[in-house]
Amino acid sequence: MNRTALFPFPDVDPGRDCPLCPRLVAFRQSARAEFPDWHNAPVPTFGAADASLLVVGLAPGLRGANRTGRPFTGDYAGDLLYDTLIRFGFAAGSFEARIDDSLTLVGAAVTNAVRCVPPENKPVGAEINACRPFLTETIGKFRNLKAIVALGRIAHDSTLKALKPFLSASPSAYTFSHGAMHRLSGPNGPLLFADSYHCSRYNTNTGRLTPEMFRDVFSAVRAEIDSTS
Image 1 (tube, rainbow, N blue to C red):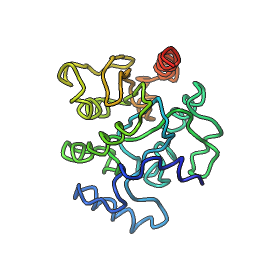
Image 2: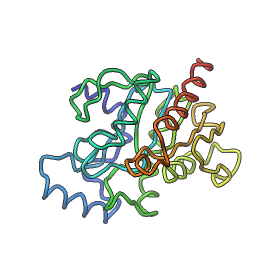
Image 3: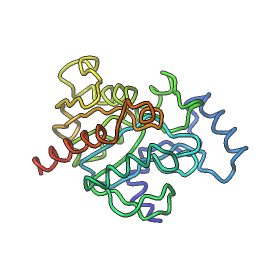
Image 4: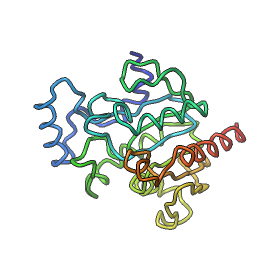
């Protein structure tokens, strides 16, 4: 495994035994006792150091990224996400829902607003706030960043708060809706900020999000990045 590709900026990811959120620490310890062969730790950012696109999700799934140690790997959400990234040239290789597959990201990176798995996939406000400095530092590391796609409202809100020093208005002025596009300033230049419903099984099973709706967001982002290259 190419650890450089998986961990482009290890200095901005929380340590394996991050103590910041007591509830998440307790949940992590319980998972380690029950599933000792799993990752069971904060899940680091995955992708290329020269990424022009950053995808921000909510948090690792218990049997997905918390098990494998790579964002969106091991659960249904990753199937749609990585298929879409491959389709639009942001990834190459084969996604097989395991960390030793041949998948690589091309000019893209994937991270989460909260790096540890929360009970019932629901982080609380204090946990989102405690993890935001890692998101802020991660965004700042990508010197070539041109676009961010936030998957779901929590990712949307936390990312905008991470970018607050660079915004021309309050984060609340940028309303979340699927397919919304906002042009922002970022720590390293202009950014296209795009929203999508989260690619969870629940959203796709209920029809709230279809693969076509999801692909439309990334098609627009691809066109924007290509036009500014």
